[in-house]
Amino acid sequence: MDGVDVLVIGAGLVGCAAACRLVQAGARVEILEAARPNAGASGANAGSLHFQLERRFLENGEALADQAASILGLNLLAIEEWRGLADELGPGIRVHMRGGLMVAETADEVAILERKVAREVQGGLASRMIDGDAARALAPGLSETVVAASHLEAEGHADPKALTLA
Ligand SMILES: Cc1cc2nc3c(=O)[nH]c(=O)nc-3n(C[C@H](O)[C@H](O)[C@H](O)COP(=O)(O)OP(=O)(O)OC[C@H]3O[C@@H](n4cnc5c(N)ncnc54)[C@H](O)[C@@H]3O)c2cc1C
Image (cartoon, rainbow, N blue to C red; front, side):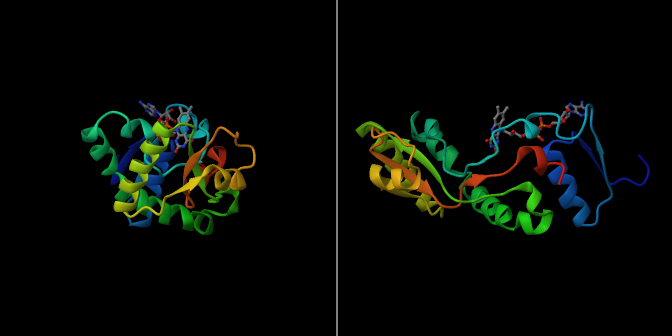
């Protein structure tokens, strides 16, 4: 491949984002795609911008929880990048960062979320515990069985059909 510094295999979100940043840094980049851009998971996912630690990583021992928490530094960088992405790529990617909830219905689940939030706060993430009524005020469709939730204002949604192409 004459005249190419970096060959990216796969035009999903990861390949296109890497190619985009490499070009901005001055590299000559070519992307090879077997089907069509955004044909894979990147164009078919739920579009959630989720930065809280996944609860399952808190439910299976401290070693796994420590390992999961090591991603928090990357999550902080990602939040900053997502905040500026609509300015960079245009409003068509439909990024909305209006907050995300993880809910608890039992005392055991509340305890797991409290441990999760403690780790997140230690790692610099601005998550917090709220009670069931406060969660329902944010998301009125939530059941009365929800007794507490962890809330992170920086979470939200983007359009998976538009993002990779942008
Ligand atoms: C059901 C579901 C829901 C999800 N929900 C979310 C969510 O809400 N939020 C979130 O952040 N993430 C979510 N994800 C995860 C997210 O979609 C993936 O982590 C992300 O899209 C991976 O991007 P990618 O570029 O690595 O892979 P892909 O989007 O799969 O792209 C890979 C590309 O490589 C091409 N390719 C493969 N092999 C070759 C080859 N040999 N030569 C050339 N091209 C090749 C494929 O055709 C494809 O276009 C979800 C995933 C799924 C499946």
